[in-house]
Image (cartoon, rainbow, N blue to C red):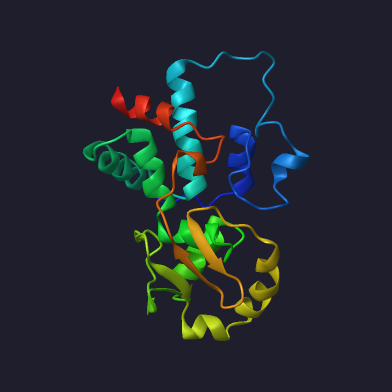
Length: 202
């Protein structure tokens, strides 16, 4: 199955939280789920709730099912709490790090910046959005990225953007560094990684 390319805010409305990351999310104007309204409320089973939690994270990070399952299998093989390791692996994706640094306003935009070859890691162009960023790595723009109109606009917008504690940002030079691994407290509160583990454990 290909990556979802339909209306982004449709998924936000379906799951009741903003997954697209845009300030003008349709969820604000239309908080009800898409489609015809049900005449009676249906109780969601435990399995159904686990599926919802899995889909929320998958759509938020823009992954296909096979990609997401591979991240889960990777987390299972490593020692530690599987749910935390899964979310850490997702947070350490290059496109997500670019988003967290404030170089992009959404993860989709961050993916596009990386795929177009505008982002560098340790002063070398890297155009793979799923690339794993290691602690100590520096993230910035390539020479072409620095000359782009986007970089000029970003230089003003990034002044008002905050970054998590596991990242370090130089707003003047438009460069960042991963100074630590993301911890459990850095995971967005509306995600439930334990439910994802339970979903795949059956």
